[in-house]
Image (cartoon, rainbow, N blue to C red; front, side, top):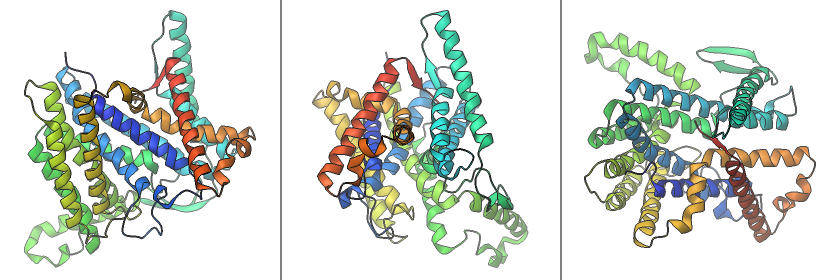
Length: 426
């Protein structure tokens, strides 16, 4: 019987989410290697700079594993696309909370953020009731969470600003602003691009590799200005020129709303790289063919590292600029890390000892949302200064120990919530 999940992928995701909570909790006195690289335009990266593209890569690895299982069960591609779209919408909405909560003026911003995340968890929760009464309670809680979630979005209000909504410029905008979409929103957009690609192309690695190359070219082209900038001078295009002019105007409008070379170039390329490795792993899991995915991953990591070096002339390695070299190098590191975990499970039989990380990986979204919920709750209860006093410490060891303890608390809280029967599923 084939496994429903690949343990090594869950462990890698669990390690990534625990590290993300840890580095997000650190204060100013943290060692430089535990902060995002400073100054922001420096050519290089630290441990925190690798975490987000690691999630992008892991998201890509999961796509073939999940979609192949679903398609093999007889679900139509249209239904799979609908699920991918739904998943993207939820991630984008949760990302908008992250981007906008601090600017809410209708309530205390922490209250709005806290209620929005809690209602989001309830709206996306799954529960295995043991009786009809429990099922009724669960249904009521889920419906109330869903209503509260959208109610909070509708009631959001901020100071008037000038912004762009779809293709229109609005002077006195007081509702949600997309800005940079947030971590979860960017994950959602990248997931959508790669999942659609996989639904259309299937497990054909040569085509997935080609799409990876196209996404990287999309990012590289941005360093020469607008990708359509030179088309008006290409008279040999003849009657196609008006088509490119129209396409260029739509591209500019979309690009102002969702920066295409970054979101669908750099970030989706990390997800597509993960999808490429996931396609090999999926074939190993779901077919009778025996392939050594670990060997493939090590070779693939070498290729990604080489591509990162060749991409260095396009902005260097920089997280804030979302350069291709940063994305590719992070993907190479993630690829090697997964290989080590896979080897540890198969050759050293360490799967049981890493079970807690596997648990965190299966509940990564809940872990991510619980961290700010814990912080905001402590602030509203006026116990933040006492509980999180380590954040203002000038002693790096005190700060690291405090943030490590907070990470363990968030992970333990996740364990308690899941044991109580509540899980998030999107």
